[in-house]
Length: 548
Image 1 (spheres, rainbow, N blue to C red):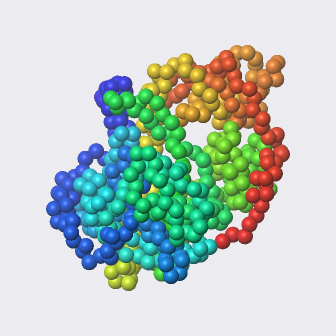
Image 2 (cartoon, rainbow, N blue to C red):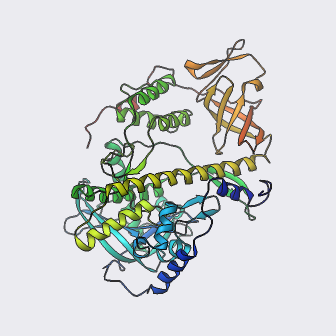
Image 3 (cartoon, rainbow, N blue to C red):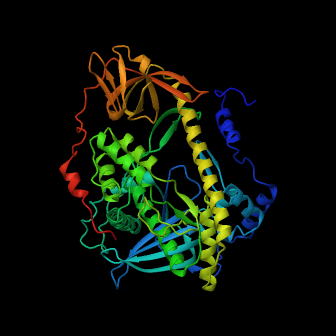
């Protein structure tokens, strides 16, 4: 018996036990980690490519301690090509195959990021110390250097065992502040002569780093546009971020923001992952891919029918540019949650496998995970394969072994994600149990014969408005229109409608949240009528293009 969930730490421990998450490292793994730390010298380049004088930065969440990746962007003075260099922590240098560290990491397969608690894949002396790309420290890396022409054609790609010293550690918020002081992307006179901007309040940045940030932004935004031109899909489903008081109690929550600072790092990591996958694919060497198979046709047809009922018809459900158009058109609309979650349910689950297949959502034919070896075992496997190729010019892997490993890592990934969602939900419910009667503006995200679900617009919580609480009329369920219809008043509650709700009941044990409608409802919003195109401009954007 762990005690009541209201007792500090019981909610966390209950989730750890319920999902069978690891709690301690074996003594042998800790001993090996300490031995690696004792052997490491801060002045030993280990025969690696020396990047220690390059202008290199990291960009991570404010509370991060395991820094996997660092980046640099330059312009080749001769060719005028963009040169993107991505440095990834060389965990493979410290965790040798078959050793205690490796065996435990393989078993865990992933770090688990729970609220206020990280269960790391490696002991902290590795994950937050030796391997973490800390500012000013000598660190070993696997490096991918990619060239792009001015029109973003891929040029030469190189791979190295490298050594770096990070010039500056940024948070996403700091980068966002600095970029906000700069002129818009694309207004530079030339990409190789960026105009320095004054530092943002509270962020001390030297001119070389300012120039780097401008180049990073300009290149990343061009790569992002190119990725969407080839048909990549972007689902807008922001994660919940919990807020805490000084005593560690949840005192609020908000949706995570995906701003330019996040998008820059995302594009660079995608480019590096794809470059490594394309390299091994060209060599015809088996490797652990990150695959996302195309959805079934019937699933896409169901999505198209659903989107059409909400006023966003598709000409062809199997056209990714049509899907992209609808996702883009609804990204800032009340129907966003319903449309984007429906699209997610139509897609297959991504997984790890050596079998050659595409990554459908990214519109990538060859893709793998390479950029987070501190927290994902598949990345470590890819690092070891790349290390053999860098050292010997040869690489090989057993498909059967990769298949078993991929299945295991996929399973552990799903366990970690489910545990994180469950604990976040539990903590949100605990917080809301102290806020009974509070009003929230919300959007209807699901309708059934027993009521409708509503997602708060500014707070990451979804609750049920039970039909029995709608006492002003007799409501019946219109399945074809995803609505509850009042027999006398003709009032409708439809999917995507804005409503104002009150926190009515919280059942923490059953993980249930009940809302009821507030007396003061917002005025009905203008919405596209079913069967009609929402906006002509979006239709023009969505016409079919030649794929890259």
